[in-house]
Image: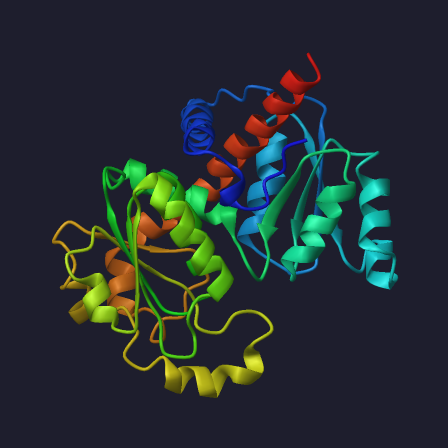
Length: 312
């Protein structure tokens, strides 16, 4: 059984297959050709963390593929009343065809997958956000930034930074990560990415100078400085991240034709200025739309692989 828990679980070719499927299905969708790749299938969507884009994109996506999505918040199921994750997995996976989970600890996701009879997709954990990186790469392709790109990530060493590490290490491009001291990426994840990069030829650079990271970059990206569950740290974080806002002065250091990406929600005046956000709004909201199409590619790929394994 193949699950989509982190990009490290796939080969470069497999990731590119998923993106190619997303491109194909997006083109069909734009032509109002809704091919029922997953006809009559049910996607269980477990949310321990709330979301706008994740719910809308997965629920719409499975519908456009011919199936149906079930929204399950922690308060809607026994998981929220203390049922063990493994028991929830063994029950739900006998009733649905695929599961998406948006939760806190990566270990909870992995436990669910270990006991699941159907493919499980990581809709976000505190460690990784792989569906967003497939989305970002699809957007890079559409804006002509997929050939040997230099990507600069500026901000918190969080799940988005970790996922950029996995994508760069698998696909073999240059990634520069600039974080304030004390907010670096997880050491074990960083070491894993560096090890993977030796095989792919990726160049991964860590530092604390955002301007140095952005210099001559093809893609500049960031994320919120205060993620869900960190609200009590807001004032401390605002001070620590001074100088890390992507504004016009910082973007001017990148290549003239560089693009700016943001997974949203964006907090203007913090990680990105109003001027930069609006200047790259077309890219950013194309990226937001691509969550829908990238995730359809992932779901169809997983379903195809399962069918092949079962000899269907």
